Image 1 (spheres, rainbow, N blue to C red):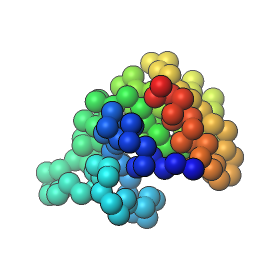
Image 2: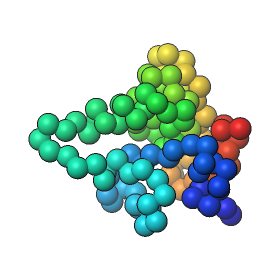
Image 3: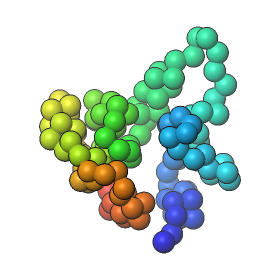
Image 4: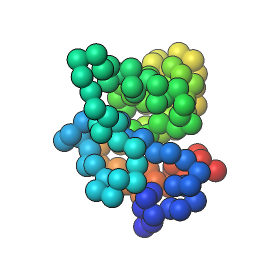
Length: 124
């Protein structure tokens, strides 16, 4: 399977931003993506503020059913989500009726290839 960082077309066309905290994700050891965790922060820094500014300029948010994909829906940003609460995350929390691609995954064991292929469909 081709990985995101190896897809030259996507890497040239889009800037990919990692928004998450250790140990919930594994940082890219080749620094191919902008990692919000690399921003030097101080007492006046708002992590959610940084996240919102990134979301305002985004075309797609990818993640399991959680706050960040839900916040992106408020900004009209298409979300690719997976989890076990489809109705909540596609209807109830999606008050602006933003486009959502939701993959049922009750055990949170979805294969990365499935997410990657869905992302490719959305970005075409």
